[in-house]
Image (cartoon, rainbow over all chains, first blue to last red; front, side):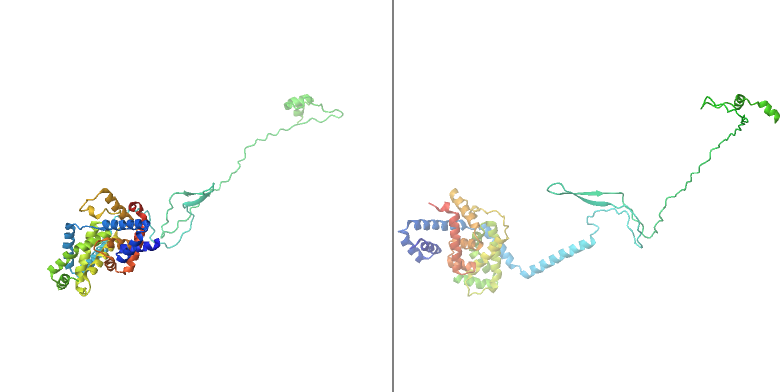
Length: 233
Length: 177
């Protein structure tokens, strides 16, 4: 007999087959390996039997008995109706709680600054809005994404029914710059030049660039007789 | 079927409360052993026993008296134990040996061996574990195990053979001389 066949017989013998046990006995007398293996399998079966064996405690048995007898007396239909009624009551209470108990429900208070009642027309104008800009900063791996949010002053919502205010144009003042003439005093000085003498050149002035002398002095230098001239006039 | 059971069953089916109680007390011990063998723990075994007895009492009205009563009741007990087993969370810890509840006797080595066997059986597939547990009971042979599990004897043999091979490998250190 091969070892594989003996292993099959061992299983059948452990299942309770007397024929298998007899056939295996003859083989095991000549094969100590199979004998040792069958002994180990018998120990395994015995260990499993000891593990699952349990002597029921009397108190547990009594509690289970009393409860079972009591529960078996209860009609099952009533329990289904009771369970359905309870479930319906719970659902109804939950619904009522949702509808009527809103005030009691914890809420978060949110402050509303201004809510436009109606939008009749759209007024287009330039307003300042918050600018959200995403800027990708590529460095090395990995890529960091930085979000910059510019927050400006809150944008006021125009009241829809009110007409749009006319844009206030800045008052432009025209300023003219008038050049005011400065008073100029013109002093005219008549310069009487003596009659040129024939053959005689007028003397060159030595001091070029010098201050001009007074008229009388100049006339005296030139030999003009001022008194005589005045008398003639 | 024993004559006592036949009379008791007939009386219990007719609504005799005393007969119902006597029928329960006559079979509750076996029901408990089956549920405890599968569940391996007293609290769950008690609950499963109670549930099995309730099902038995409620099912008496439709029970065919020509059938065997004990295989029918064992089948109920196995189903209730399996229901309790499947309700357990998967990460539940392995229960201690059932006998620790009442009789804590035995050597430390025997106790360790039982724990090792219990841990090894917990690794078996459910059908193999149930077959080994039921067949390990003293009063259960191959046929009774097959009836309780609701399958053919050949199927039970297949489960037992595979389970033994697995346990043999897991518990090789414990089983060697």
